[in-house]
Structures are given as structure tokens and as C-alpha cells.
Amino acid sequence: MNHYELTLILNPDLASKFDPYKEHFESVLSQLGFNIHYCENVGIRELAYTIGINKKGHYLIYQLDGDPANINELETKIKYDNSVIRHLVLKTDTVTESDSFLTQDTKEAKKRAEERAHEVKLKAQVQQQSKPTPSETKVDESLSEEKKDESPSGEEESSTTEETTPEKTESENEEQS
Amino acid sequence: MKKLALPENFDHKNIDILKQFITETGKIIPARVSGITAPEQRKLTKAVKIARFLALIPYTDKQI
Image: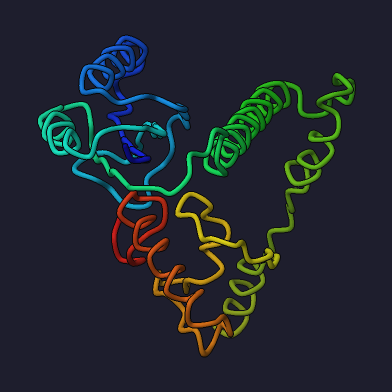
């Protein structure tokens, strides 16, 4: 019996099929005599480089206990599984039964992405409201701060076009006469 | 970047610590520059290479 850490990078397009896939995979593991200590579902992360055509991957980390003789069979099964982009089996000394830094990092990245998307949405709303009535000052309190930032830049349109051409023509006329 | 305390064992999943020991282009910084001991550097190198294989940190900045 050895301790193993199995990392799978799954195709992010699985989406709704993920839960049945996970169940199926865990049944395969138990068939091969592996005892699942802990399963860390990291979630969809951006890959540091593209693997095939994938820019994102669903990370899944298993802490296993099992017979070393069955590792090869497990690897061949994973190898011919189309929904696994990449996999790695590591032999470990101890079994960790807690989420690693990756899960936390992925959650934070997801939160940041959501906040960014929310800000973009708010800005788009403010722009839509300010376009038809640019001089309007009564906006909701939540939107007022962002509007203050944007309103001066929109109104400050310099209308000082220098009229030099008529002078030139006059001087030219004088010279001609 | 804020300097993080060195762990007892380098873990390939803890990429914030690993990122302190790679350059912008993705190379591993030599121990004589970073000042960590030789046994630490050997563990670090292993962890970085595993993290690279799992696409957690890049091999190079030229890959897209």
C-alpha cells in the first residue's frame, strides 16, 4: 500500500456532465482497489499555457491509497479518456486531507473576475443613462461617484477653433492690390 | 511582491511561493542569487518542474 496524489486536468467544457463524470471516475478508482482519502475539487482555472486547444482546465486532485501494481492500469485508463487533458500521479509520504492553496487561489481569481465584470456592467449602465441627458445631476447614489469621474471629461469639449484663414486672405489681397 | 516565509517542503500547488523563485521569463533563479541552501534548491526545482507540467506556472513567456 502506498499513498498517491492524482491530479487531473479535465476539459472545462464538461460543465453539467462533471458530476456524473466524477462519480464514474471514482467508481473506476474503487474497482482498481484505490481508497479515496480526500478529493479536492479546485474548479476551473486558467492554464499557464495552452494544452491542445484548451486555455482553461478543471483541476481535480485526489489523495489515494492503493496497490502500486494497479497504478499502470489506472494510467492507461486515464490516457484513453478524452475528457482528461493532462494527468499526473505522484507518490507521497503522507496524506493531506485539506484543500491546498490552489482552491483558495482559484476562488479569489473567480471573485476578482466577477467584480471586474460587475464594474464593467455598472459603467455601461452609467454611460447609457448619461448619454441622452448629459447635464442631468440627479443620479442614484450608488452611481453618482462613478458619474462624477466621467462627467467632466465629457463636458470639457474645447470649442476654440482659431480663425486664421480669413486674416491670411485679407493680407494676401492687400499685397495684390 | 511580498516575501513569503519558506515552507518546510516545497509544494507544487503553492504557486505563490514558487513564483518568488522564478524570473519574469519563467526561469528558475539560481540559489547563489536567491540565497537558499542547496537542499532547498533541489526541492524547489522539483516542485517548479511539476507545477510547470500541470500548467500552473509557465515554462517560458513565449508560450501563449
